[in-house]
Image 1 (cartoon, one colour):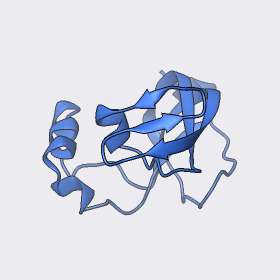
Image 2: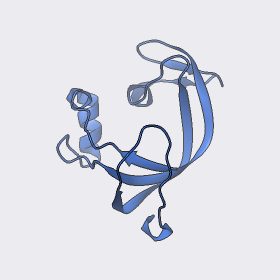
Image 3: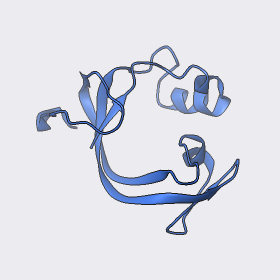
Length: 114
């Protein structure tokens, strides 16, 4: 699965201190985030449905509880799904691509993956 960065930066999310510190930890600011590109690939290993949530945690149908940074960085509304991934690979260089809502196909050459 390819991971695509939206063309538009969520400026409201970037105002949160935790988000700003996560960006800084990875060498980014709101102004320097990559946009409109495929930047990584991964494999899906599982999919879970959110069965309950409050303001700090969510419970998945497998019994796992999501908290902390993982909870903050996702939308864990009841009925939504959480994807578990493995094999995360950053692409160099990033691949410019116009995104679409939902899942869509785009060819990625193996030599771009590091």
